Amino acid sequence: MARVEATVDGNSAEPGGSRAGSVERLAPRALRSETLLVLALSLGASALAALISFVGSLTKPGGLKDQAATLVGSQAPGRPWLDLSWQLFGVATALVPVALVAHLLAREGTGMPAIGFDLRRPRTDLLRGAALAAAIGGTGLLFYLGARASGFNLTVVPESLPDVWWKIPVLIASAIQNAVLEEVVVVGYLLRRLDQLGWTPVGALVASSVLRGSYHLYQGIGGLIGNMAMGVVFVLLYRRWGRVGPLVAAHALIDIVAFVGYALLAGKVGWLPTA
Image 1 (tube, rainbow, N blue to C red):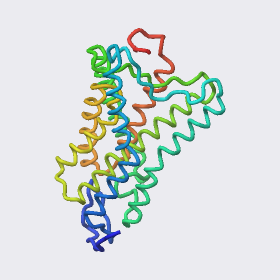
Image 2 (cartoon, rainbow, N blue to C red):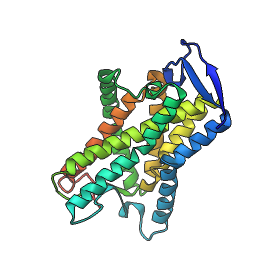
Image 3 (tube, rainbow, N blue to C red):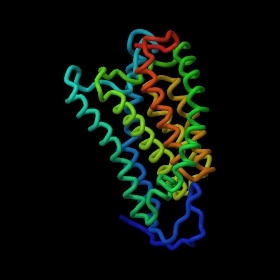
Image 4 (cartoon, one colour):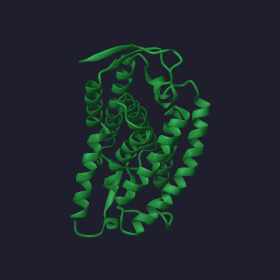
């Protein structure tokens, strides 16, 4: 693989606000290939799958709101131990692209601290994440309810797991996996690579937010637009803070509330749509 060796002044700022010393810099062609491969193995593939799913929903008789998109469902109904094995397998394999990003950044000579995914500021990351989750979570719920009522969104079913002892732990693990995968790949890694390729900040923001929205298209137009808007906010905050840690915390908290809240409230409150 072609590469260019470069020594960077220790006071030079890295994309997103981090700093690095001597690093290995890949040639632009290699950087582009690497980025496309990482996306093809992760959320880029999810975006294509979401598009196919959305086309299927559009061409199916009936409106979008009369169809359901299940986020965490049973993989082996009636066989709880096998189901648990599949759930854990799914969570673990979904994080392989994150391990790949960690490897690529370590090869670069920086590692995950370059994108702010570490334990250097746990309290600050958690507090910022909680504040962000509170701001986005309520707005996102209202937007979803409005989009569904208008016929632009499927009915989102956050979970349909059986009532077994591992249900809540698996939902929490799934929420954390979603947060780590999306924020590390779509914000930290992708923005770093686009910066290194010479993209403008606006171009990188558009690419990241459109990608985030696209792999939520299986939920409908509301899922696309709502997550694009969330992507814009997350990119702007990443540029300001230089860390994906708060974004991971916020995303995890939003999904935990959605998954566990649905498990506890579905069928018990009138305002929460169910399939």
